[in-house]
Picture 1: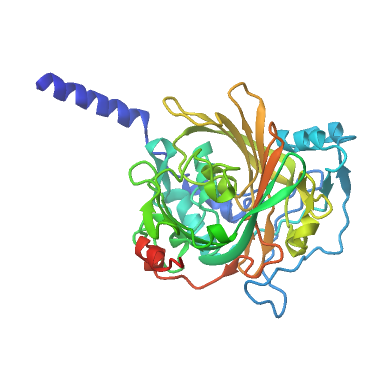
Picture 2: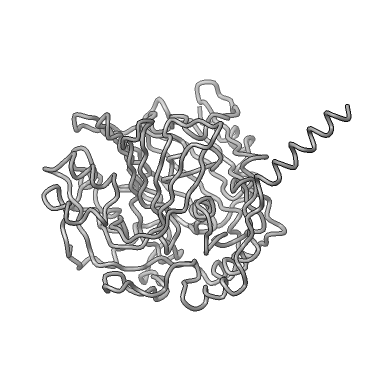
Length: 453
C-alpha cells in the first residue's frame, strides 16, 4: 500500500512538473499596450515599406441610418486593385502567399486569382474590451499544458503571446460582440464545378466571457454558447444544435446537444468536436474547422512560429453585399468579389500531440495581428502533403465595432471538392447584434421546447 502511494505521488509530481501554468507578461511588457502596441497587442506602427499603415484606432463609426442586421456598407467601394496575382506571376509573390493560396492558384489557373487592394487596419473594439485586455495581460495564465486558461475575462487573454496555445486562445476568445444572431446558408462545391445548398439555418451566438459589466470572478466558465436551428431543405427543417464551450477544456470540456426532428427529442452529442465530420455541412469539413478553428486545443502541440507579412482576405463588405450567384466562380469563390490586403499575421503550427490522434496531423494557422482571428489555415496529411486549405471572408462591422470572421471556405485539394459556410448573401440578419439572452435560452430544455416537428 505504501509503495502504491509513493508511486502515485511520484506520478502526480511529474505531471505537475510537465504541465506548469504559463503566467502572464510583466507589468513592463503590458505597458507597451499603451505605447508601441495596439490595445490588442499588434504593432501600432506600419511596416518599413509603407505598404501596411499604422493602426489609428480602426473603424468605429457606423454609417448614418444603419440598422443592426442589415448588410454593412463597403467603406472602400471606390478602390481598385493595386496588384493581381495569378498562376502566371505568383512565383514573384510566393513569400507573401500561404501554401494553400498558392495551390489554389495553380489548381485553377484559368479562373482563380488574388486581387490585392490597399491595406486598411479597420479592426476595433470598445474601450472596456481594451481595458480588460490590459488587465488580462498580467493576470491571465494558461494551465494544463495550454489547454485551459484562468484569470482572463472580457478581452483578449494573451495580447502578448509567448506560446502557440496562447495565440490560439486569442482566436477562440476574439471580440465579436456580446451576443448576435444570423441567418446563413452552406454551399457544397463538387469536383465537376457544380454546387448544392446543404442547409439554410439560423444561428444564435452568446459570449458570456464578453458580458459588459462582468468580471473574471463572476465568469461562469462558458466563453461561447451557441444555438442553431435548420430551416431548409425541408427534410432538415427543425433539426437543431446546441453547444457550450468552456475555458476548462480538459476537465469540463465541450457540452453539445442535438435535436432530431424525426425522433422529436434532444440527445447529447459528444462527437460534435475535433475531427468528426460536420454533419451540418454534409460532412465536407470537420467540427474543429468551423470558423477556421473551434473547440479544444488538446489534440495538438502548438508552436508559435512568429510574424509574417502576407496577403489575406480582409474588409470584404463588398463580397457580403453581392448576390449569391455573383460570389461563386466554378470551383472557388469569385476573385471579382474577394478583397485581399497585405497584413501582418502570427503563424502558428499544430502537430498531433503524443498519444493523441487527428485525421489532419499537421496544420498551419495565420492569425490577424489586429483582431486575432484566423484568416488562413492549411492542413497536411500523414505524408506531409498539403490536403486542405481554408480562408475566411472577414467583414468590418463598425457598429459593433469589430472585424467579423463568420464566413469561410474549406477546400479539399486532393478530392477537388469545397464548401463555403455561413454565407449571408441574399439573406436578412447578417450577424445582427442583439441584447444578451437569458442563459436558459441556451439550455437543452429550451432546445426541446422549440422543436417544430
